[in-house]
Image (cartoon, rainbow, N blue to C red):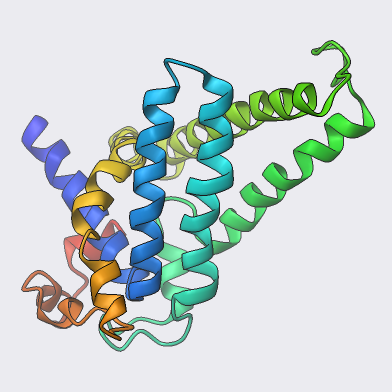
Length: 219
């Protein structure tokens, strides 16, 4: 059981990398995101409010900016897949779902501004510091809620294992991305805009032979 779980985790990670991390700029931003997420993880035990601010304002914005603005959204010749196909089979948050999640995140300060008590949950904020700390608490809920919502959603549209594997992947992505993309900033400084390793990875060649592979089925 554990061996199969780890294999599914490996597949989800590989699919995420090969489909959505071609750009060296995106990879470099993921490296920055991973560093700041690790800081946020540690700071959860010190001051969760600071952790939420760093997690959303630095980690999430840098990570999603890489996907939205620097990753190719045209036909993927490496994987022989259209952008629409990749969006359809994406296990976690594809770009459309990310737009919804980021919109909720961006709109939450406005809700608190219009109703300083947030429907009676908070004491009215009286300073900018109070406002930011209350916003950060909302962002903690948005982050945790987004993770749990998609995990449970996967229970129903896929299976329990897929949902749990995806949640594990998301929570451990900062550690994995730190190692995977640590050389991306140097490659970018050399003028390398796209990762040539995606053409060379032997696992990728499995996806070029007729029938969908296990990786494609679980992407």
